[in-house]
Structure formats: C-alpha cells, structure tokens
Image 1 (cartoon, each protein chain N blue to C red):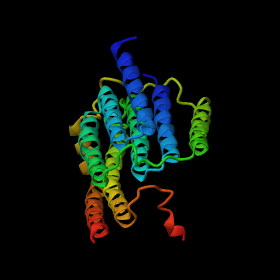
Image 2 (cartoon, rainbow over the protein chains, first blue to last red; image 1 turned 180 degrees about the vertical axis):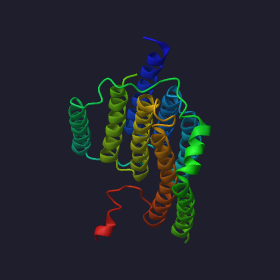
Image 3 (cartoon, rainbow over the protein chains, first blue to last red; image 1 turned 180 degrees about the horizontal axis):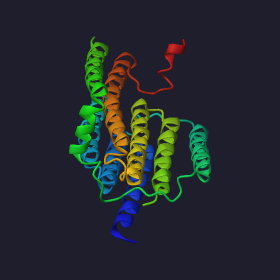
Image 4 (cartoon, chains in turn brown, blue; image 1 turned 135 degrees about the horizontal axis):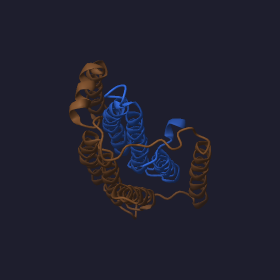
Length: 165
Length: 109
C-alpha cells in the first residue's frame, strides 16, 4: 500500500469517527467541535485528490465561518449537556435502524454498478487548481456566479428581517 | 484509489447524517447533521470529477471540472442557508425559550 492509500484510509477513519461523535455527543458544543474535525478530514480528502481550491475554501467557509456561527448561536442560548432534551430510547433506536437500512439499500444497489474499477486520480491532476477553476467559472458559469451574489444579498436581507424585533 | 471506496465513504457519512437528524431533538444539532450530509455529497462530487477527468483528459483538458464547480455552488448555497436557518432558530428561541423540535411543532395547533 503506498502513501496515498494509507492517507485515504486514515482520513476516512477520522471522518467517520468524528461524524459518529457529532451524533452521539450530549453537549452541543462538543458536537460542533467534532464536526470541525470532520471538516478537516474532508478537506484532507480534497487535498489528497489535488482539489486545492475546494480544500482551502472548505476550511475557510465551513470550519471557519459556518461553525463559528453555530458556536455563536449555541453560546447565545447557553446550551449545555444538562438542559439537553432526549428522545425516547425506542425512537432513537428506530432512527438508527432507519439510517442503517438506507445504508444497506444504497450499498446493495451499488454492488451491480458499472463504475467498478474506475479510478479517481489521487495526488495529481490539473482541474483542482484555482487557475483552471477560475477560467471555467468566469467563462462557462459566469451567470450562476453572478446570480449567487443575488442569493447572498437575499439571504442577508432575509436573516436581518427575520431577526428584527 | 478506486471509485467505490469514495462512494462507500460518502454513503456512510450521509447515513450518519440521517441518523443524526432522526435521533436528536435539538434543532441546532439537526442543522449540523444536514451540513454533514451536504459535505458527504461534496466529497462524492469531487471524487467523481477526478474520475471523469482521468477518463476524459485525452479529449478535453478540463474534463470533469463541472463537479468541482458544482461543489463550489453547493458551498455558496449552504452558507446562505445556514445564515437564514440560524436566524429562524434564534427567533423561535426568543419566542418560546426552547430549541426542542418536539416543542417547536406548534405550527400544527
């Protein structure tokens, strides 16, 4: 096994373990911290696949901005482990069984898939570089790019309008 | 790395997110599990873009770049959605002093 495969399995184990800890943690602040670890693992996967722009943007936007926003809101509401409401034990078990059934169905459906043997290129490849992404973004996809700025404006206005007393 | 490993990893992360949405009562944790699901899909899209790039790079130098651009736009939408969603949660908390989704179903009454 070369170093890429070792890194892949290590990052996958880190991502899956911290995702399970997000769901299991009683304290919401701990859940946020475990989710930040998950985002670091996923950014590691992006950089392993040489998607450099997305790896860095994932860290900046998700772990750096969105999770900080979550932490602000949790601190604002002063949530901690004692005041945390708990679902009925059987409902939690039903949730786990439902998620497990979906996992089984999706994995079984892919056993017959035609993508077997195709390889995702690790470590090299030009399309993750910011120059090529920028060229494609500003030539082929310039209209969605400009419309996303309108989306942000409407989200900001909406958040302020919802938050006013 | 064969593409099935990435598919299974993304499916596992997605299903962990679904279990989180179903099994937790705190609205903020549910929201975080939705972000986890979005990230699982992002990972799979980037893996597929690398697969298509490898398959099509002889014909077109930027084959498979659409997947990564789609991930960029998913991150844009997720950021906007988080800001509005958290504003809604803060408003519900201000009115009812609870973020318990069993208590927040009062639209029904």
